[in-house]
Structures are given as structure tokens and as C-alpha cells.
Length: 110
Length: 110
Image (cartoon, rainbow over all chains, first blue to last red; front, side, top):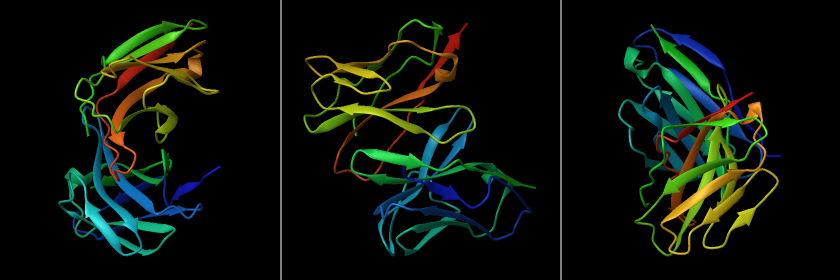
């Protein structure tokens, strides 16, 4: 089965730090996504990528950037972490009808 | 993508069928209905999708009304492990974004 792996399950970072969240998928999917999930707000799309070096903004891109240098890897970057970016971050890849999600990274910014 | 409406929560007795409704009255002709679920502390998991016809797989059945304005996900014999948030999503197959609404929190009780 498809595997989507996020580099960390839990992260604690300080305000102002640059944070990298990494996601790797093993099935050569073109489409990859980054979401954040907060209580009461559900899953919100931050960015997605439909090919290497291609990216599109989702619903809440402010404060984030992304990098897709290789097809299998999609990185989410918090340029200067803030406490309101404390959240669960979920990466996904998609092929045709199905999206496959990683286990999530719970980021705490202190 | 068409908007979907789901009840925020439902209960179901273990071993009984769980019927989860979804309204999507503005669905267009080329939009599919997808269902995902998210078990606590895990990423969302694909369940099933359909366009017009009813669909069944090893996880669930999907019943779509003839006018396609609503659908029902059926878990035929719910177990405690089916306790999760269930998301109904409507989108074109060619679309890149996958937008999650609030979902229905299903609690399966012994």
C-alpha cells in the first residue's frame, strides 16, 4: 500500500525559528498536499503541488511556504514560527480518486 | 466544489448498521462524492467514492439518490474501531484540491 511518511510525529520549536516539515511518498504521485488541523476548524489546506517545482496556494497560505524539488518529497516551511501556528500538520499525496495521508506532525511553538 | 452538509455527530450500537447522511444539493454533473474518515490521532483514510451508481467495497456502501443531491454512507456492522470523524466531500475528479468540511463524529457504543 502507499506510504506517506512525515519526518516527525511531535515537534517543539521556539517563536521566530525557521521550521521545516518534511513529507515523503513512495508511489510516484504527482499531487501532494499540506493541511493543518485545529479543534473546531477541521482540516484546512495550506498548499498543494501538482508536479515538481509547481505549487498552488490553498486556503491559508499566509506564514508558510513550500518546496517540491523532487517528486517524492514535499516540504512545508514556517519562515518564522509563531504561537498561532501550533497545530497538527498533515501531508497527503493523491492518485486519481484516492488521497493518502501521513500520520501527522503535532507542532508546538513556544 | 459543491458544498456538503453533514450532522455533527451520531451514535451507533456495536454490530448495527451505521448510516451517515450527506447533503450536496448543489452538486454538478461531473462531481464525484467521496467519503473519508479520520480515527483519532491518525491521518484521514479513504473509504469509498461514487458518481451516480451505488457503490460497495470491503469497508462500506455508498448510496446516492437519483437526483444526486444527497448520499448515505453505510457501515453494515459497525465496530468500536469505526469510531471516527467521517467526511463527505464533493469534487471533480480532475480537480486538485481536496476540501474537508466539519464531518460527522460517529461514536460506536458497546
